[in-house]
Each structure stands twice: as structure tokens, then as C-alpha cells.
Image (tube, rainbow, N blue to C red; front, top):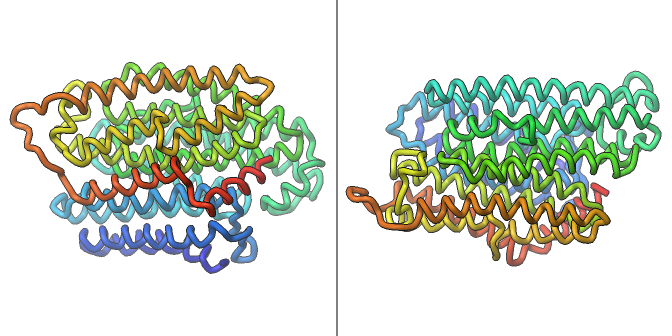
Length: 477
């Protein structure tokens, strides 16, 4: 299976380079093909044991593969959506730049779970920042440029803190391995029980604060609503469904080492504090949004809070729920952004007060957007219902079961904001003069793909995927 890691390493970046020179229609086809090949390679890794390549510099275990599944699926679905979103008439130069950047962004998120070691992990996440900041500003508007600049400044400061966390962890390892060694995960895990506890605690707090900036944890989340709102919709989908997930993956790698070094209590308490603050703020802001994409951005912050709280519970079932939540959120949030893109194209606005009768105007993507929103609200039979049920079950079996009750209350509050959107904008009569019909069949296809995945995760996840989640959860304990 080592060759599949090499294919993952070269496929999206090769497609990105090709898109710079190809006509837009060819770039669209290449992007879909690149996404499909990436999904195929990741699917081969699902039942496989730990796999390494290139002398150990590339390595995937079960935890890595869970996040690869989320990224690869969203890469393919978003590439399909982008075919309908970015029309060849938009301009050859814009189309080439968009698809080149889109595939390079996907490549950066694919390699993040594939590289072996905390140092390479930091480099990969830094690449995602640079590429995604350029994509946020690609529409060349004043608001997009401002959002991109704000994102770049805040994310760079966060990654500076994450780099310090890496240096501090390196220092902790040097007390065991000496002054020169590689920060490979197996090596750190083997030596972690002998690391100095105060140094590991400092490193973990810095990692949560640093990578939490990219994940969207409060109080370092402020770039996220602006960037997700102003970026092209395919980029917003990748930012919410994939980038936040791989940033969480980076935190989990520090979590693994910290648990081995100092036990689980301190890391769980840190994540609990950040998680409750994040979920509470997002739930409140969801009720007051009037911009469609900002609404979905705050929904992403809400779900990142759920992930952090879920990791604070001691029950193994909660960890399985957290990892399932990563997959379900990627499918649901990608589908929701696809529907938002279709709605914005139809009504020509992101203002929720100006969007009425979405289901009547968009006979396919309108109802599917409502279903995606219901999925984000953890309604059955969708995957987020299943994942949050597992997380809450784990929380209620934890000695601190009151936190499980707090989680339910805050998630319910967030649901009210999303439900308001669904009822006020998508239902009702179609405004006069609005032409009924879809903007693109590719957008419809991408939403069908997302909803099918979301339903499968909720009703009956494939056996191999369930085994993968169980193995990954075991690696976190």
C-alpha cells in the first residue's frame, strides 16, 4: 500500500499544475478526475494497517485515514460542484487560476494527515494557510481582500504559536532522545512517558491555541466568518468541511503524545474549556445572522466546539462519535454550502431577508439544502444525529455528566438559528419574476452525493468504516 501514499502525494499537485495551462473545461474535468483518484487511493487505505513510504516520511494509521476520508470525499464532491459553479464564460485566466489553486489547496489538506511528524505537520498546515488565503481573495473584491488579509494575519499568528508548541515538544523529547532527532509520531509516542510533564502541558496548551486558530476555536475564531462568507463557494465548502478538520487532526496528534506523557485529565480539561466557550458563542451568534454564508460559518464553529467537548469525555464511545462527526460534518457542511451557492446564484444575494421561496425556485437544490440544514441540526436519519448521539452517550456515562447536558442545551440553541433560516427563506411563495429551475445539474449532482453519504453515515455506516473508526478511537486512548 506504500505506493498509494505516493499517489496521494502527487495527484492533486499534478492536476494543479496542469490546470494552469489547460482550457477551463479541461481543468474542470481534471479536477473531478483528481478527486476521484484521491478517493480511490484513500478507500484502499481504509482496511489497511499502518502504512509508511519514502523512508518513513509518509505514514498513515487509522487516525490519519479517518481525516483522509473526509478530505478526499469533499475534494471530489466540491470539484463536481465547481464544474457548475465556475463557468467557462467566467474567463480563461480566472478559471485556470481558480482550479489550479483549488487543487493545490486540496493537495495541502491531503498531505497533512499523510506526513509523519509534528514538524512536517506544521509545514503542511502552513501551506494550507497560504493557498487558501489566496483563494479567499481570488474574486478580487474589497471585502474579499479584507477577509483574506484578516485570515492571513490571524492564522499566521496562530501558526506561530503552533510552531512554538512544536519546538517545546521537541525540547521535551530532547530530554530522552538527545539534541538531534526526528519528530516522528511513533518515536514521540514511545518516549512520551519519560517527557517532563510541565513541558508537555505547555506544549499542548500552545498547540490547542495555535492550531485552534485554524480550527475556529474561541477566542481565535474571528477570521472564520469573514473568510467563509467572502470566499468563492467551493472554497468555503473546503474551508468548513476539510480545513477545520485537518486543523483538529493536528491537535489530536499533540493530544496523543500528551496522554502518553501526563495522562488524559489535563488534555481533556483544556479541550473542554475551549469547546464549551466555542459552542456557547456559536450557538448565540447563529440566532442573529442575516448572511447565508456567515450563518453556515458559525455553524462550523458550533460543530468544532462539539468535537472539542467530545474529546473531553472519557468514554470510548464518545471518541468514536467525535471521529464519525468529522466525516458527517464534512458531508453535511459541504452539501449545505453547495446549496447556498445555488441559492445565491438564483437570487443574486446572500442576504437572508431577500431570499424567499427557495424550494419553489430551486426544485432540486432547494429541498436538498433544507435536508442538509436538518442534517447539521442533528436530525435523524443523518450522520450528525448518530455522531452526536454517541458523543452525548459518552458524556452522560462520564463522571462529569453535567457537561453532556450542557452540550445538549447548547446544540439545541444552535439548532434554533438554523431552523429559522430553513423556515423563513426556503419555504413560502416564490417572488414574482423569479424563474423556476436549477442553475446547474452538476450542483445538483454534488448535493445528491453529499446527502447520500450523510444518510449512509446515519443509517448504517459500512462495516470497514466502522472498524476504522473503532481502531482510530483506540489510538487516541
